[in-house]
Length: 424
Image 1 (cartoon, helix red, strand yellow):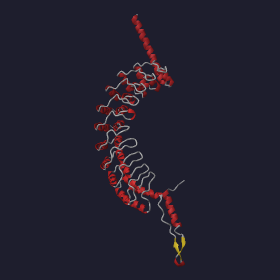
Image 2: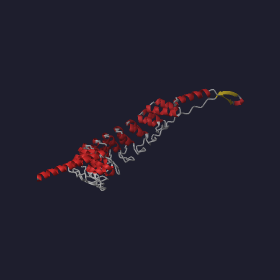
Image 3: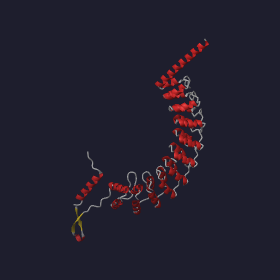
Image 4: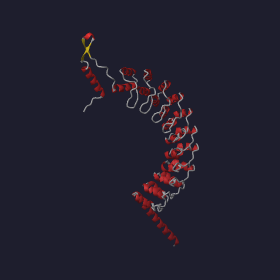
């Protein structure tokens, strides 16, 4: 069924009121008992929600005359939309300076009023990147230290969007370069996260802490590595960032790089003195993480730079064990090529062959078998690799193990026959 919109309803109501109320006559007692007929005029209608919406749209579009007309009609300049934005927020986000000046001149605008996210007009201006509007707001009393619900200052928002000119204006007005939001990220974290190297350089030139401040979770360098921001990594290392600082779960930048598999960043870290044998909170080395999900090149570089092939994590697993967890065949081949123990057992007595059988990782299992991994090793539960495959219903693995065992027995029989012939 057709439903008329709010604007149609409003028009209909106005028409109804003008017809019904305009024709009402009322007797009013006058002086000396005289009686005259007077038209009873209806009072001036109050503004509607639609008028408020029109005000916000007009402010967004920068329509000064329309804004003036709506304010004269009685629409309050401080009315908010569903997100708590006032006309001043809209005008500031869009950079309509003429309208911003007019709204301030009304004397009814709180320049630091907040929307539902606790963002002020300055926050919105900074997130949009209009440096002229930002400068004007600051000159008229906008707060540099106002925080959003996430604890972000205007500089956080400017840095996150890579607005260089806006960030420069904020710093010229003495904005602190090192505030931490509720996640302990500084503006430098945000600009590195977004890949804005020029803004990161501006922050560092104005006193930003290259390590992100005290009690920070992840350093800007670690974040740059995680985001594979090579230019950001180079800049931070040039400015003195420590590549061996520990972040979440004791991870260093090298741990993050090992997982991401970026060769160029790994080389930059190695040149800056990053260590390859630091353990994280799970006692895993960068080689463990690279063997699980890193690239062949990264695994190779780590091995060439002294990473331990037989290092054990908290579960007594070696990097070769880790390579079987994600079926990382290339990593497994390299580790075996450089002499990794293919029959090493972890805390529960399982070899890499056991783990590959449990997860159904056919490719890495075949590599282990071709290199001569022992299929008869039993875990702490007295299970062979084939037993584990049966428990987890890995039919293709069972078939491969049985074929391997059959070929092995044939090879042994052939070797025995050849030896007997030589003896005869």
